[in-house]
Length: 483
Ligand code: BG6
Image (tube, rainbow, N blue to C red; front, top):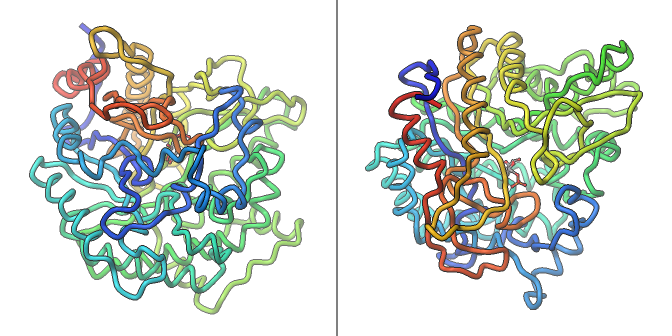
């Protein structure tokens, strides 16, 4: 018998996905390409060091429109959820999931990004998906935009400081809220808003720690507009009292490498600017002092319009969500780095890492849940957490993924510890219940699912679904609470 964990009965256990990583059908039903679907898969020389071998520039993206030969774009095909959603939703339900986090593809609803009216076929597709979830009694959480900007924004070099971008996004966001508020209770306007500052500008200098501060600094004005745009979505959503709007931040929990006060203060500075800054603005509705100090020192001037401050203050998010895969360290005395979720982080000698160099740290999840609850006192939700591994089917058509069982079980245990600490965390969606195309490396080989999908990095395969050992383990956990 395994260890029994304590969770409230109503705790929302679920799975998370994103349209550009699962749907495929990039040119069906009126849809056009999004930026994500233009990102080619590039074979990595060194999986634990992808930023050294894979730099995606705007030129590479634009080239992909004409040059379809000899390169491959896995996000155009995803896992064919577009055609197989009924089968997938049924499998999610049978595993015991209570909530499904998915995103809507902007270019399925507004194919050119800036159309005046929505594409009916796109709306119909999501209506069918939501109907299916309802039939299976699955709650839904929707990310309105998960890294898939329309091609129009890339071609016109738009960023969030451009009115055209804000207004077309708002039209899209309001349209989907109007259409689907009866089906969807939880909405996240932007996935990992702290990564948007640079992903939306398509700035990619390897995205390592050295560049990240520079890039973020040049993008604070973009971010400000993102915050304001999100506040406008929240304001609009008030006409539907049954729905709730939350934030989504890529967590970057880190520790000081040691107790050298210089390293401790460095870590605090980094935690401020890489994590709390975003929550502070979205929950408290104002810019914190440490950020104003940094802006002042760097000469960053936020171009605020009249009414921005009031909008932010009057429209805080109603719950916080965050993705949590790993933790890092900070120090001014050591340079040792490892790969992370979109950025390099300091190595921690006490932690093991995945094949992609992401340091596994379940206790860090309890730590961040406590940090966020202590600071904000609004409901929390873990919207992504999981482990990417190279896997193949064995002769019994399954994968004996004991490492995933261990990873998930240890993270679940730490959530239950945080609940005992008094933290109000009301749900968890694993990344992901089913194998999907990787966001960072556009490969299929980095598998996160409890369900194996038979496609390789070049979209060869049947697309058939097979249950891994973790699927049965999770189903049992849902029934017994035992890990
Ligand atoms: C999160 C993203 O940052 O990390 C997901 O929201 C992504 O879209 C996940 O898939 C894991 O990253 P990757 O690069 O391994 O797919």
